[in-house]
Image (tube, rainbow, N blue to C red; front, side, top):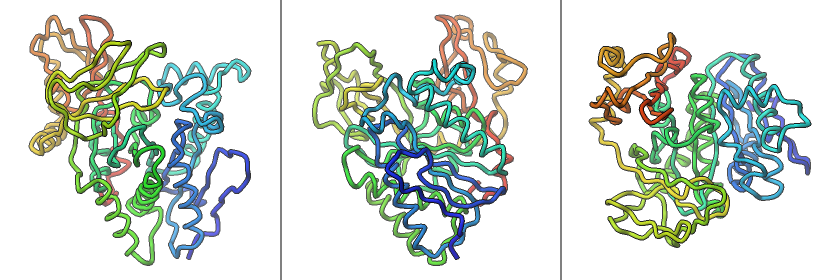
Length: 399
């Protein structure tokens, strides 16, 4: 029978909680975020629909689900953000500074981060694991639905359940995404891009994804399992049967004052030939330097990335990566010149690129490291694998 603890707000105000099911102190608990970017409302609408469906479907509630509305003032104005991008603020340093500020001195997005952080922290403190964090987004360009993850094996394993493309390594090019913060805390964290902002199919894809997450995590146990197959096939068809892993190779960065215009007609996951004219950036023509695959071209005013370039990861590389991580092969890296542990926790490496001339980004990627340059001679390689709370998910069927 359906749990009687379902709460679905139906006020005209933008409540932080879109809805909630379960009243259990034990896990699993899934946090869904919708509208972290205020002009991306498909996730919010999808969560609202799922809570309505939960009121009519015959299911057994075995865990907890929270649907959390992201940037409230930006959603009201239909903007990506008001003062700064809420999905670029979740660094430990920034969070600490915001939590120490007086509310009256916080800007719009700092207030949003403060409220979301407190809500999630309180729930994690009062509930038992496992915890899952799912951030629902859409893109300004046409796209297949896809998943983005920070490269930890718990994320790879869980995201592999879904019949959509999976993109690794975007955290290497972005500072402060919400999911990177959750990954640093060690939890399973996925971003799901359900389609283009304006397409109704983006809502449908998000609904399908939410239901699959609920059943895969065991939060919801359906009496009739046929709907799970229906949602799986829906996503498979929307993704055109593509469920490969991809890696980000390049980010075309933008400043707030830049004049950037993407040429019309480009879509994510489309192959482009060397020399293809992509955009005009401050009146300069931007073309591809080699054959590539385009990812998230920008067709809106606000944004810090004009586009990304990605490549498919071969299956042998994924298998080798998994083997090397299980062997803790990265323990041997510090025996090489120019590489040392950054601190006693052994969660990140400091690489002196002048000494470690053999440095190859691909090797570190195999071991779960992503780089962050601190000066022209040194790079900090951060390891998601060593921060992952693998023991939290050991008994989960998918891991």
